[in-house]
Length: 275
Image (tube, rainbow, N blue to C red; front, side, top):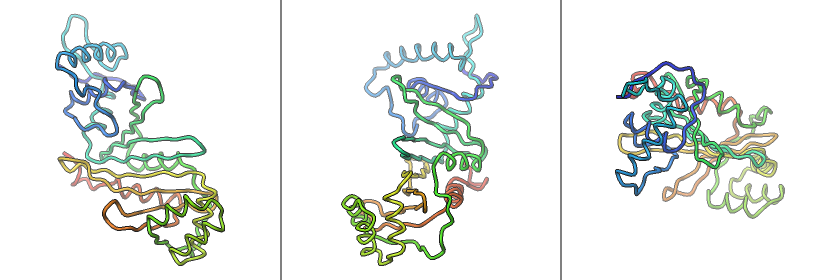
């Protein structure tokens, strides 16, 4: 029998097999961004892996077994982190590159708490599960990791609409500010806006992607947006998905506007919360 035991662990670090076993015990088979380590395993082999994982979890103090008892207890911190990561119906993936450094995290959300799951860069595949607080605190933690332009956005820079195909062809083909600005302007018909966007692309500090995921009971539904930041302007890029048109809308945005967008994505009225 598995029950809960008191603990004050701050960050829960689990190997891939350990995370899968604990999530499975709690009834989850839909961990995001984590491959199933037991594909192709026979039942006997999985049982042996569980014995090894159980011993490792006992050694870490994540599971506790009293001497002379067959009962195994799970610390409340481990229980809470794994339950939210494995059973929440709202999640948010974000990844970005910043001066050669890359980062990817998955936020798993309830109305009370948000747990972030990140992969540790080690030879042994491990994952860290961290409590980011409530939705508002989690949004602040996410946007604070990213380097944004701090300049005010002029009111004369509108949202710009492009052909998605042409947009990515242009930024791949043109590496100079003037030539890229001209190519973008020919598509969106706004020279000032195209110049501001081209300047951010050429001088970019950070670029990445946001992805909102909602579990509908059978699969994850998603919507996504890209972003790019430079010394002068940050841009949010929304675009068509495959087979659904050929468009891309680039909108200038402040750090606070990104945080508000993320909050709106993740926040959900209490009466709609997962049961």
